[in-house]
Length: 511
Image 1 (cartoon, helix red, strand yellow):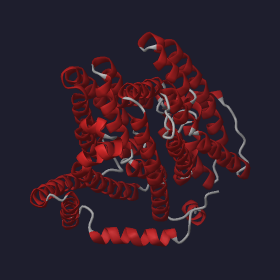
Image 2 (cartoon, one colour; image 1 turned 90 degrees about the vertical axis):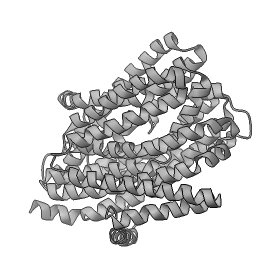
Image 3 (tube, one colour; image 1 turned 90 degrees about the horizontal axis):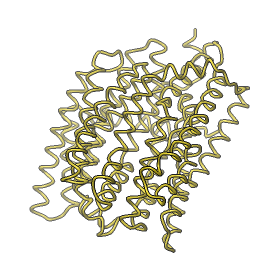
Image 4 (cartoon, helix red, strand yellow; image 1 turned 30 degrees about the vertical axis):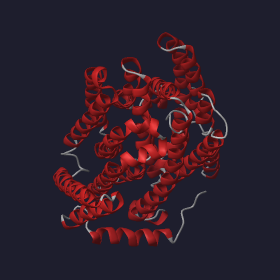
């Protein structure tokens, strides 16, 4: 009876996954593309020293912000998804209490972060860098990149299966960022002005998110409540996530900070621009994880482990194929792409950009598996992944940065990412939602297909000296191998395409 009610009130699982993923992916591609334009213009406008200070300021504030983050965003998403299921089945409505308590907790912790940044930063950095950090503190409230206060509202939308709304609001921010940076090219902007653009471009999406949540609260007759026992419950549930998020944040941000102290601004800027450009290539993994995780929560809540395992299997194969294809494209085009986008002063960043392309494969897998493990209430898997990645990246940085600079930092990060992904896959091998044998087989086949594609690319290029033709043939070899090895056969792609066309006939309600 309950399942009948759910099926009448919601679209089918497949339709929700396809609609949510396709809508959010298109929006995120546009968003990441706009951010890509903005990041390119920042690199062109600022000197190597200013870009190094820009990078280390964001990294330091992001590192300190983990005190307010506490790893709760996946937890919030899971709890809101469970609350939606409880309401559909006639249970107690805890959504107002969860939202009010989560917001109160995050705002309070943001004040703590602001105080710590104000006190600690003058001990480590010159006054001009501390000033940019103080401006960045505004981001704690309104930014979608520092996942603190605004991310509570994002978690509400994700838990309701409406991640495409979060992606839409992020698109408005990205467009504002790109537009303001384009206007900045008509005059000489200093670092402070770029930082203000970086912060205030989040205002449009923040306002739209607040309005969307307010409309939902009014329509559902939900009253916000702050409950201290709920706040304590959130803190208790987040214990493994706190450690995991702290380790993961250190892993993602420590490179820039150590490079700043152990190397030169030139190395910091080359490394920072490579990492930032690679984020424009990672949209698909984050979208797929954001859409899939709440659905896994719902399926496991209903006891449907079989469909949860099928859903994760398809998602992982899509990530393997898309990640490998992106890495092949980056490898083929980096030496031409980087100078044309950023100018000759960043030509030395091309090899680093190639490394980030291949790093996307373990990052894609880790991103999805971390979200799914939290959705399945296996948060310690995320902690193990982040802990291994953090330890190896710090050891690699300390050993390699003094002699190899940004190249050493990138090698350490690639190794750390791979080992972290291996760890979370190994821990998940006996779970109810993951088929380790199928994944390992698909990974091996994708690796062989990538090798064949690169050999074909290099052979054709050496004989024709045409990068475009060589890349096209290389990608043809890659997907032919993927098809005949049944990693992602053409019939499965066609079935997905038919569902996408059918789904797009009815546009999603953007409230």
